[in-house]
Length: 326
Image (cartoon, rainbow, N blue to C red; front, side, top):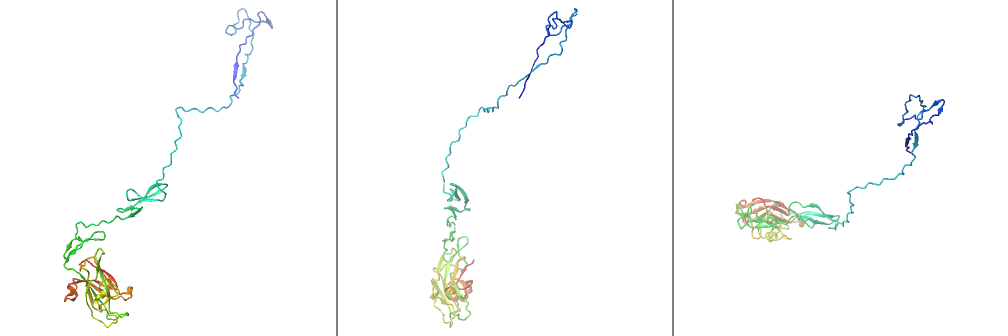
């Protein structure tokens, strides 16, 4: 408790009735002057009594109880307006179902749906397009501009050169030094009859495809020269190798057969010649043979057959031969 000391300083004046004596001493009546100072003894011999020690001041203790503990009010912040709560924002509508996929508007991007929103998941490689959320190669557009023949870039052909001409790599028709329109299939028989009783290669037919892998037809015309043999299954009917391959065939018996295709087209670089031989795939036994390109059906019967034919390759059983650069 906090105490407050207050000092009261009264002025005590000791007065004695004039004329009174104390201890044989006369006390002057005017011992203090108007300012409360002791007067100087007069010449009359007045005697001033000793007032003794000055009085001690009274001590007053303030016992006023302190005010009770009261939380001071929070000060108000000037200039701060009341802020209303934000309004309720409705959720965004679902754009799609999670897991859905689609193509972007650019036709290249693939998008997937997550949390109801479309996100880009990837894109097709250059030149490819997006369809039903999958990438596809663009449709092929044939191009035959500034060419006379050859492929159109999409599996077709731009044209066929007239007789006695061939299509160059640049797509132009030119007359070559030699034009081949027939194939020669020559036997490589060792003279021994097979376990099936056949003599040499048994040819069931031949097929021609152009550089665009289009079918140009099966062997339509043929001529043959057989050496003959004593083997049991020795078939020499030339019709056995014409048309699509079937169960019939012709046994070369150490000789050869030459044939051409419908229309006798010029056989050019990139063309494919497939020889069908009676091999294990059709219940026979494969035998070796040679294939040549010839200018015509008379070439192998001429005095100088090498001047009108070019070697293509050796085969065994059914085989395909690709025409090289001629």
